[in-house]
Length: 441
Ligand SMILES: Cc1cc2nc3c(=O)[nH]c(=O)nc-3n(C[C@H](O)[C@H](O)[C@H](O)COP(=O)(O)OP(=O)(O)OC[C@H]3O[C@@H](n4cnc5c(N)ncnc54)[C@H](O)[C@@H]3O)c2cc1C
Image 1: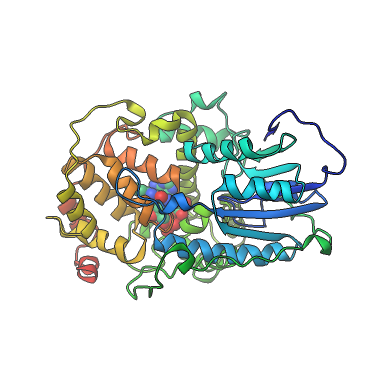
Image 2: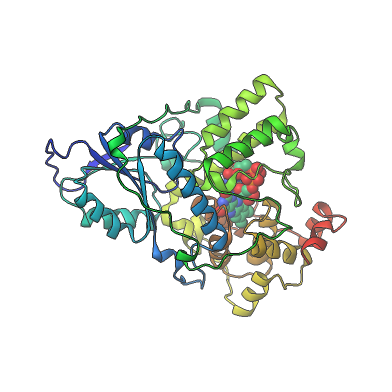
């Protein structure tokens, strides 16, 4: 936990009991440490801001929030609003810069404490800095790193500098010495009078998007919100037992059940990694335990690992030389970029995957590895353009998972073997009958 007075704090009793919880990537009411702590206040308002900066083109020519994730986000927020209502907590959600909306609310409602899940990447840190600059002197900031499976206090490394740069070394030590925390208790229900503000969640059109139909070929009908996340988890374990074959199916390309499809909910925190972990443990105890059930947890460890790599290397994860400071002769060719994005390269397997991404906002892990390797290692193009395109498009975009996987595949990250994919061989192996390619091209 990080707790500080924003500026010289001088608490007064009248302010003591009013707080705001600023939701970011923790859009749930269950197993949410930040909410549990914030709900100990007498008065609590929940806030979510959709920054207009997300819709501006960045230096790579892409925005930071495309239509698939935007739709999923609004669904998640509507669900969160309903959940919060049961605790008599209002959610204010607006398209606004955090540094505009939050200080205004802090002053208006005489708030003395701001709770949030701690994010450490530059843009998120900058947002908080700006909020603090404009907030009244007395404001206290309370933050929790609650997005991990294995909490930073639980892992067997003295500090982030000691995080191994090889995943296996990290995993083995964590599995041997660390414990996953139990789920958080439910938040306190506040007095009815706390539910004072009504504010509708913005519409899709308010974000500047046109309505669209989900492509019927979509691998999975993603729908935001904790309720849907739990239903999917329940289905993948208890109803279908698909988890018992996960290790064999996880490199699949077609259909809803070759992998868990939990990524989009995990990314915006509609479900926590701990909730998935403990449900798998329950399933293993009551139904079946095998290599596949273990493997889902193994993948969640990759998710944690990249968060720790980002804590260790900070902004290097966004830089061309990556965490290795390695220099290659990268190209930046607009035509090549358009061909890759549009699925018009010389490799049909890459094209099929890129079309799936453009049409649905999702791509399998196997597909992601191939298209990224092709972009960075075969076409020798600046890998950050690829990562930035994924950031706009992916329904499950997560800053650490995206940028660190890109580093990994591009030879400037944590792959000790620095592999390059043979795309034709990969297509033969994972799509031998070309069913996947025929579906998309
Ligand atoms: C270039 C590239 C970019 C990627 N960008 C993202 C991203 O922005 N967001 C994201 O969630 N995943 C990303 N991944 C990882 C992985 O492809 C997706 O997590 C996975 O395909 C999502 O489908 P699923 O939920 O069915 O995964 P499952 O196979 O069911 O895995 C279960 C969970 O484990 C985690 N996980 C699995 N593989 C990885 C991995 N390699 N790295 C980190 N976590 C993992 C995810 O949270 C996933 O939901 C990326 C991979 C590559 C190669």
